Image (tube, rainbow, N blue to C red):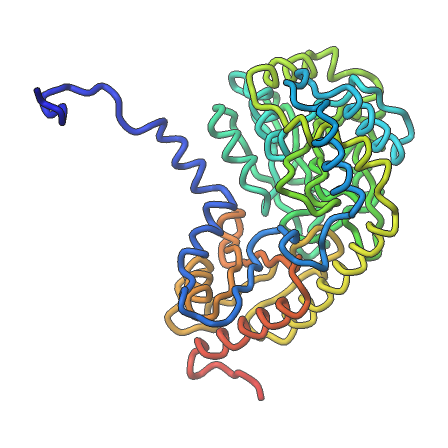
Amino acid sequence: MDSGGGNVAWRFGAANPALAAASAQSIRSLVHRMYGCVDKSDPRPLAPLGHGDPSPFACFRTAAAAEEAVAAAVTSGKHNNYPTTAGVTEACSAVAAYLSRYLPYKLSTGDIVLTAGCNHAIEIMMAVLATPGANVLLPRPGYPLYEARAALGGLEFRRYDLLPENGWEVDIEGVEALADENTVAMVIVNPNNPCGSVYSYDHLAKIAETARKLGIMVISDEIYDHCAFGSKPFVPMGVFGEIDPVVTLGGISKRWMVPGWRLGWIAMTDPKGILRKKKIFDSIITYRSISVDPAAIVQGAIPQIIANTDESFFTNAMNKMREAAEICYQKLKSIECVTCPHKPEGSMFVMVKLDISYFDAIDDDIDFCCKLAKEESVVICPGSGLGMKNWLRISFAVDPSLLEDGLERLKSFCLRHAKPSTNQGS
């Protein structure tokens, strides 16, 4: 018997090649590649400035009330069953009430679909919109999962620019130039990952008016909702739902500092009901019925998480994030080869431009980040993965002392690799 199957004409092989391309576009894959470059023998602590996960650091621990709510949900024995397709009713009601606090109209339980994190919500929306010939407009720089999910579903995507000289605002004229009769939606991310910007009320109004003129919906990624610590307050895009239909994506990952709990949502912030008339909501429910569920335990805890978390937790968290952002901004200003066009005012990131001509034997941003990880145990996300070659995305959602240390190592690395003729200052 040929146990090796050497004479069999096997008909299977590698999976869908589009998966490899999609994976290569993911933040996780890109940052994981940088982690692979780290010298494990380096005695210094790793400075993880490549992704927005503050949860490992004691200064960013989630609210005690949130932990207690999950523990109570576990011990109650009431949340061990399969949840319904849209999500546990009480959880959907709690999310609807939470979002309604900041809107000029009230959302109902039926306006909410719970997801396994915001990434799952992105997957659903890109799948729902992937009708033959359709295209969506995505920001550059942007969160690459949108592109990966669009590509997997055969949905064309077109990139519009965010303008660093204007605080990373949307290039409205660029959006209008890109759109055609097959454009169905534009995506915005506010507060913004990867740029650290927060859009003003007036700018959001312009986006809504532009989308209305084009006859497209706005998908507003608000996973960093209320993570704003600069001069502009967070304004939900749903405030403009009367002007243009808005699908709001969100979750508890960032505001409660618990990305591993995987609880997100899709909200129909569309008081005129246009999305329902166009069967968008029905398609979302259909996709959810063949997709994964967020953990029933966390769904069961959501009403108490929202109700019992004291406002002081959010205030303290934003004070810490503001402190970290200030440390990051000031440290970056002292590094000659990087330019920070806009002080971060929200999310957990900042984008900086890298002057490759400053260096000797560094080819581009990816080469820079690989060598930085190997030599300094500092992990940063190269901008090429976000549509911005020779830029860097730096996360400041890190313990302040480790953040300072990591940025000092970044500065030392830059000086060490500068061309001999480069003016390095004193």
